Image 1 (cartoon, rainbow, N blue to C red):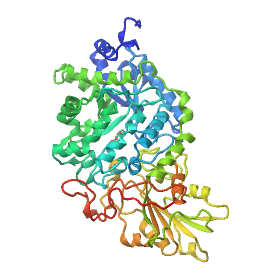
Image 2 (cartoon, rainbow, N blue to C red):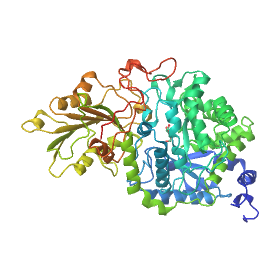
Image 3 (tube, rainbow, N blue to C red):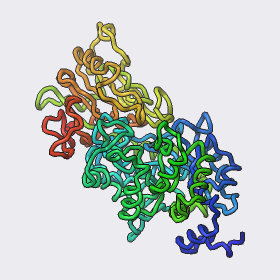
Image 4 (tube, helix red, strand yellow):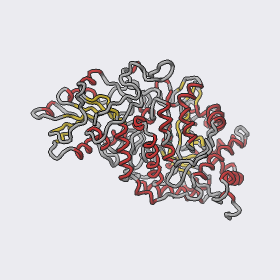
Length: 607
Ligand code: GLC
C-alpha cells in the first residue's frame, strides 16, 4: 500500500485521523484480532500475521527460553513483531509482561523492592526514577507493555497480594502512582486527562491494576468480594485511578474480584459508565489472565456467554491467553448475530490503535538492542540500593531508653549471621521474580544480606554464618552481636492468602534462641506485617521490617551500620492479633488505637 494513499501510515498526520483512517480499512476479523492477546507458548507467526493478533503476553513462569536472557527475548519478540508488521494492514503487536519490581522475569535484571517497601519510603520521586529504570530494562528485552503498577489499596494483610500494594492508605497509594510517569514518561503540560501517553522508545505502556477494589475483598481473600457503598469504593479504592488517568496511564486492567457480588469483568457500570464515560479514560481496558473463564461455573464453561458479558461490560482487549481461536470464533458470532454492537468493537479497537500510535510502534516496532547494557546495570542497582535503604522500617532500637543498639560496629570482633533469609536471594526478592511464585537461592544476580555483611565488615571481623544455629554454635566462643534474618518464603496471588500470619519456619523461636545468648538484630523479610509476640519484641535488641527488598542487600547494611539514617515508615498498620483484622475504626481504615505499631511508625537510629 503506498504511504500517501494510507493516511494512517503517515507519522505527521493527526493521531485521531490516523486511527479513524485505519479503523475504516479494517475487516471485522482484523478488528477482533486486535482485541485478542495470546500467550507466547501457543502463538505462531503465521497466526499473528493472518489473524492480525493485537497483543501477546508471557504469563508468569512461562518463557520461550531456559536462559531467559533479555537478548534472547528481544530476538523472539521481534520475530513475532515482524509477522504482525507483515499482516495486510501492518498493525504492530504490543507484547506484555509483569515487570512489577524490575524486569523480574529476566536473569540479571535489577530487582527493586516490591511496592509495599516503596510505600514505606513515601518517595514519589524515587518511584518515578524506578519506573524509568524498569522501562529501560523492559524495552531492552523487546517488550512494550508492562502490567504495572498495581494500585490496589490493601485493607487486609491476609491478602496474598498485600506486597504488590503500596499501602493500606489511599493517599500513600495515590502519591506512589508517580511510578507511571517513570514507566511511560512525563506527559506534556495540558495533556488531556484520561488520554494515554507514552514518551518514546525508552518507555513502556503501563497498566493500572486491578480495577477496582481488589484490595478490599472480605478477609483478604484473593479474587473475592468487596462489600461497600459506592462512596467508599470511590473514596478508598478508585481515587488512585484518577491520579493514574491524570498521568496518562495507557491501560487499566480489570480485577478478578467482585464488588457487592458482581464481578468486575462483568461490570458495565464501573468499566464503562464510570471509568470510560465519567472519568474519561481513553486508553485500553484489558482483562486479567483467563478472567473471562472465571465468569462462569464450572470455570471456562459457556465461554461464548462470558465473551458476550465481558465485551459488553467494556473490556477492550482480552488476555485470553490460550484458546484464542475459540475467543475469535465466539466474538465473531456475537457481532454477526447483533448481540454485540459493532460500535462496541470499534470503541475497543479505537482505544487499542490509539495506544499503539502513541507508543510510536507504527514507526518503531522492533526492539532497541542498544538498551541491553542497561539490564542490571550499576546505575540501576545503585537506585535499587537507595530504594532498599529508604524502605526499611526500624521498629525497635535498644532495650533501654537512651541506649540505642543500632548503628552496629563494622569492626566488631566476631558476629553471628543466622536465619533462612540471611543468604537467600530468592527469599529476599519474593514472588514475581524469575518465576510467578518466585524461587529460592541464587535465582538471579544480586547481593544477599550475608554477602553484604561480608563486604562491609572490617578485615579483622570474623563473620560466622549458621542458617540454623545450635547450642554448639555458641559453645566456647563469644559474639559481639547477631543478625538474624527470618520471614516469608516467596508467593504470589492466591498462594499468598494467609489467615495465620505467623513468622514461618519457626522464625520467632530461632530469633529467641539466639537473642537469649547474644545481643541480636532481627530482620524480617516479608510481604506484610506478621505477628510479633510480646516476648519476641522483649528479647530482641533491634528489629527491622525489610519487606521484600530485591537484589540489592547492601541497602540493608547501609543503614544497619549507620552510613545512612533510617527513613522508612510503616505503609501498613502493624496489628497485634489476627482478631483485629481488618483494622477498621469509625467505618474507615485508620490505624487503630491498639495497634502494635501504627501506620506511619518508624524509628531513627541516630546515625
Ligand atoms: C495475573 C494477575 C495480574 C497479571 C496477569 C498476567 O493473574 O492477576 O496481575 O498482570 O495475571 O500475568
